Amino acid sequence: MSFHFAIDMPIRGRWENVQLLRTSVESCLNAVFQDVGECRVLATVAGELLENAIKYGDRTKQEENYRMRVAGDLNRITVSVSNPVVDNDPGVAEVLKTVEWIKSFPSAAEAYRARLFEISQRPRGGAPVSKLGLVRIAYEGGEISASVTHGILNITVELAIATP
Image (tube, rainbow, N blue to C red):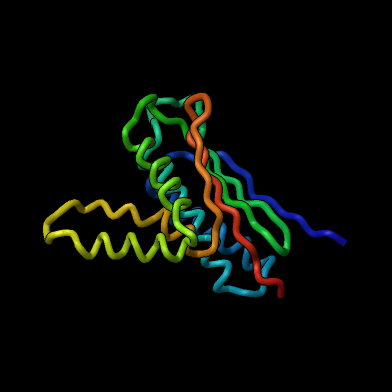
């Protein structure tokens, strides 16, 4: 028997929703999987993606919803978040550039170490933006991809699940 599940919902692009959804995703996954730690990782990935959506999303477009989807089976889970963006937003370009930067490394662990080293070399009082969130997601074991289509930023992470 094959087992598949999905959490798919529109969300409001508000900061207070990040923790609510992170907790909700973790609770739903705890009902499915035995490894509580793995459920926390997946919830963290969903939360980080939602934070990016809110940070780079165009909240002036009331008719377009932010959307989160967590779907998979007992072996693999896909977490995706989509949100409307402003055309030519430099922040969105930076997100796409960061995803490509991650993919340029032989492994996500190497990208993570490189980003941590880069952050450690910054002078005190320097740029507060670490750009660590997406790198951390990839380090957690996810294959990350990002694209913008018709004014919607889509970020997807696929994670392998340790079979119980």
